[in-house]
Length: 249
Image 1 (tube, one colour):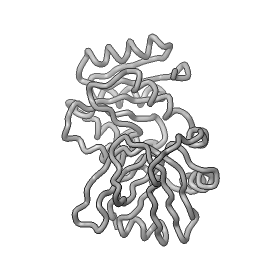
Image 2 (tube, one colour):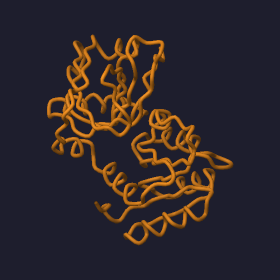
Image 3 (cartoon, helix red, strand yellow):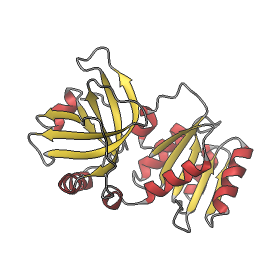
């Protein structure tokens, strides 16, 4: 899968070799690539020129990936797309998604996977979520709540720009698994979310009656669900791409 051309990408990493490798990869495909060795230099570039995609390391001197992400999404939650990369196993994947990152990659990673992921994210959700869903053999994850407010308060469901966090029971999902879901909401602008997605993170919740919380990125939404969700999301200033299911009240 090839990226639509031309794009403007900003690569941010304190490892010059990785910056050079990514710059060569995307420049060879006809894209314009700028690199920076820390977050402060990256912000200077972002303030002076348009950028479609930021690919940033998480841990850097001066201004790390989280701080850079915060500044970018404070300006605009929708653009540029932010892809974070990390070489550390202790990174909780739900945190970058909750702060607004659209993707997280662990080092080492395949350049083809990174390129494909960016391509997918550049497709508007109205088109991206229309694509035919892959057939999923397992039973869908189901959930019924009174409304979105009580769903978040009771730590059952929270919605983001590109997915949702919800409580799940056995059989437990696992990261990168494709799942189907059917969420029923008794009151409010969204009455049902039916579709499929990819589990991006799973967290056990020992203090809750359910067994785990999982973050699901939408891959497909059925037409009624898609129309209602896009209408709802346009009326919100939702920063998380996939939210962390917490009670913030």
